[in-house]
Image 1 (tube, rainbow, N blue to C red):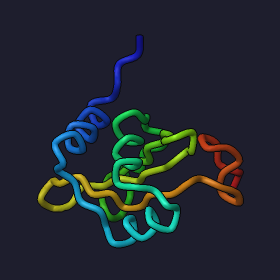
Image 2 (cartoon, rainbow, N blue to C red):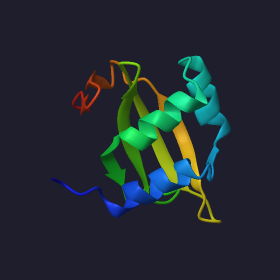
Image 3 (cartoon, helix red, strand yellow):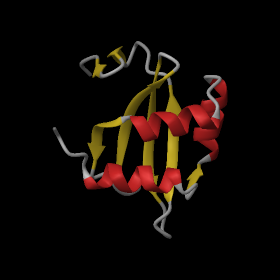
Image 4 (cartoon, helix red, strand yellow):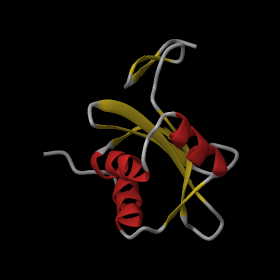
Length: 107
């Protein structure tokens, strides 16, 4: 059985303790895709890290992939200066960027 990465465990603990923030962009995207806060929490708690962005100019971040009610969802997370978990964006992966929920089209 594979073990989860420590960063995923930290992310899931923050969500379980309600210690996270949404950017206004993430909240708007969540609403645009008609996802509830509970949907997003479910994706994070049950999902996995699909991509990591250690060199992001805004700070290390990663893309979490999961699903809710059969709908695939992506959540990009970061961390603010106070070390709070920050949800940067939330969306349902679709073409033209995504071939499938877990595979990008070549750029």
